[in-house]
Image 1 (cartoon, protein in one colour):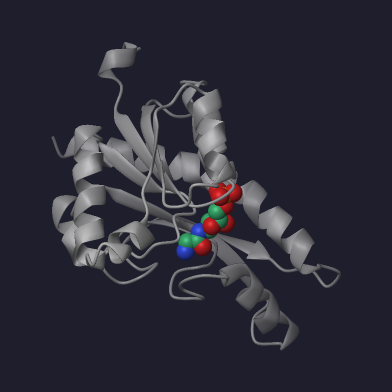
Image 2 (cartoon, rainbow, N blue to C red):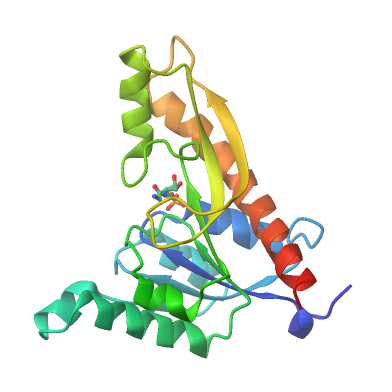
Length: 208
Ligand code: GAR
């Protein structure tokens, strides 16, 4: 087995609760699940609970603020450039967006064209962007869909698009409420984000 220093390095970007970050942390502590170490967690919200999860696991954290940049008369591109610079200092092999609710511009992706993975609570091409689960539940109630899903995909400039790494349909049940559907989706996300990160890392290793 690889020593800790030889393990692939993951940086995780979050905005909220960080339950998917927790799944990644737990999986790195069980090497057969995810052979990697999380070397940094970055949040664009100071109050994100995921920051506490990282700190409890002894992972360095950083908070970044688009608002601060804008208040200083700087642009969204300036912000993305500074996030990229920060991430470079952490020397990641893979960057995982785990509930990161900020659209990364081409400026950012020029730094990391090939190694950013996003988790999204919908099937490819459906319900891009925020509130995907609510919108899927609404579509179900209107009889427009019978199932939804989750996916992990490579990040490109188009929001929640890019080559799919793994996807999984999730049925919507007649007695589902938004809460029960969300719970079922989150439980499955906690597995697919770990599996997807390992698949992506294996793929990147093959390209070396
Ligand atoms: C997850 O459901 C994730 O799929 C979603 O944010 C949630 C974060 O939960 N991401 C998106 O909607 C991206 N477009 P968490 O903070 O508990 O991991």
